Image 1 (cartoon, rainbow, N blue to C red):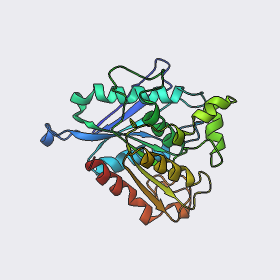
Image 2: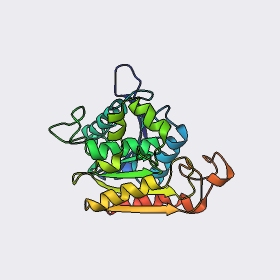
Image 3: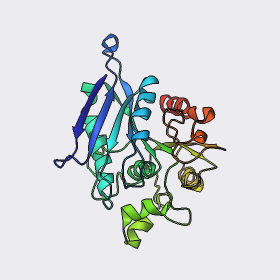
Length: 259
């Protein structure tokens, strides 16, 4: 395992923690990589949705990177961090033996909003757009994501990233920003989520489908918000330890393999 922290900015407020599989018997094998954006309402970065997720993807045979992005800062600070992280991963592809056709962003709650933001803004947001396009992910895994800034919005997340700017808040309704250049997506949510309504995932899936972008959507009937890998080690309450929800890692891994 190649485990290290790589700073993205001089102030060290944003950095990547790598979980790169280093198998001496498979030196020629290139693996997909999953760049993980934990949630936290753009106020903090949740550790429950970082390393446990990285290790789960490692167990499935994939490299993983956990992004600690800037919080309590307005758009596009966090988006710039993720864009830079995707570029850094691609620039290290040879060293880390990464399959550059399978660079996946995976986000939880507000981190899901961040991952989806890169999906929709990678080629049209002036602050991150680049001529080489190395910041475009090949796919998005969105886990109970914040998507809308409308009636089903998670107000704290939108407030933390848009402040009092109504134009930015409207722009942060990502289901309205999908274009034909958006990557395909794997999305999962709990119908019982009372923090971020399931309509966030449904509206994103519909927008992707309306733009002819492949999408796989799973809605589990039970379970609270913030389940992460949904096992007893990360569950904040008994309802968060759900065997049926734990299957999302396997389903997402199969989705990656079929990209």
